[in-house]
Length: 529
Image 1: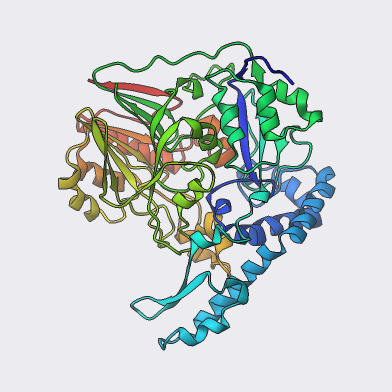
Image 2: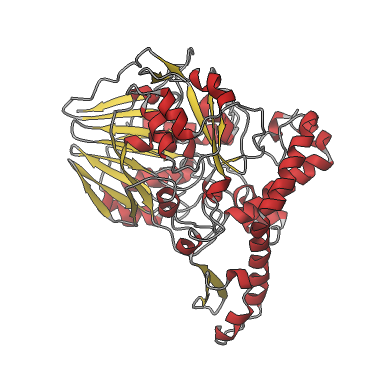
């Protein structure tokens, strides 16, 4: 293996995997991972093994690309079957956990308002000590899961974590949430937990030369994969970003909900989802355009296009503090983002609550409540970020849905006139079951499922935010339009799409009031002097 100083090539990608499935927030928490293994992954693999032709035929239709279909050819049925059998065998305790939660749900349905103490001995044995039985003030019984304790239980399986490394030469990648990675997909599939220091050592070499041989030893790269690992490195130094030294605030849009805010004193990066660097006619900012030290990373919520572990693991060694919304504690639908990140190797994770302010050099960060986009579930771990820097105020409103405009009326005096509003307007969204289905012991009726969608503001609701917060500039972002998001979002709009129609209508309203407004695509830079 090479032992002279070299750099990691700028087109190297990392895929974090759990049981060979691409990771998102529900596979990181031990409270929810067993449910997705049992109620999603096993069912998909069973379906594919039984009827592979159905999956292959369905994916000939691009409209079904985000659906419950495994994207492998029929010839790979034996490998999927082997993964199915291994998962069933090695993770029997996960299946038992899911069954126990269903049993507990039935037990709590029998509670009619009397003391819950007699029910504790009847709690399924493997859940005892991990749950507290509670009533709400309307005397409806539920269970509070003691999530930190589960991270120290057999249900948190670092042995199920691994990473795949590869070089990418184009934006096009297959949709990743419905299809497991199989042996042979990449020679660089490494059985290391996400917290492994070798990941930091590897991606530190993007900007600082290091020894590929030492990193290979840290990561346990097998000998037969040594040539593929060596191909990840080059002696050519990467291009270096020019540090921002201006007197104002530099705003750079990296795509989707990822925005870099910089002054001479501090850098703030929101919801990191960043393109790799390779020859392309589509101009964009990449990892090479980030500052060497990212002082603050802000996460608005846990959805996979905002909490993207593929990007975060690569940036972990560069991040000073990562700020996440506080969850409501103990709810399956609302696992702790702080616990997830701490247990995957992030060292300084800070929770922010509604209207809580964190002082930073030259300004502050304030958590701003937002409603919607979570299918009416009791989820607290979502926040917009009000960033004050250099005397300027910028609201990163993510997928805020102004279903109750009075919220922004109340916030007006606290937030004050904004310099910039960034607002997502994915106004249609998927049905509740698309994201939260595996958490449910019983399927939702179709009518109910379709009515409870993962949607953001339409033009009318975005205008309510505009009316109350009075931004000087407005940008519609987080629309999933960038081609390097397709493996996560499979969204491709045309001019007839509701999301485009509604966001265009909102942009026209802004401009009619003399407010500069834009829906950025690929990249954008603004200097606020």
